[in-house]
Length: 131
Image (tube, rainbow, N blue to C red; front, side):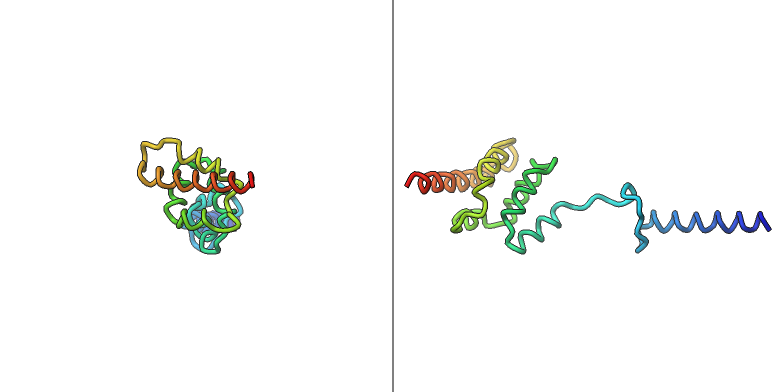
């Protein structure tokens, strides 16, 4: 009887482990078994909702910032956003410019274009602050 129960218990444990590792609808309480979330999905959601003032700071704070910021800029009409009144990104323009300037040898043409747009927005804010 004890052997039978031990075998059944072992089978149940194996099935639970298989369910956990197979990625089925079973929700594991262990976060180490869960795959990391794709940051582009959350950022895309913010963009669809026109929450630029949340998306850009979130991207700038990521450890993979050198990849995510150019991706984010490529997903939006950056000149259009930077011409909005009030400007939704005024708090992060310098950080955005700094990040785009890093490793400018990658994706040079779009980065230079985005940097010109950001500089123009900074100049506009500077002009408005002086008047």
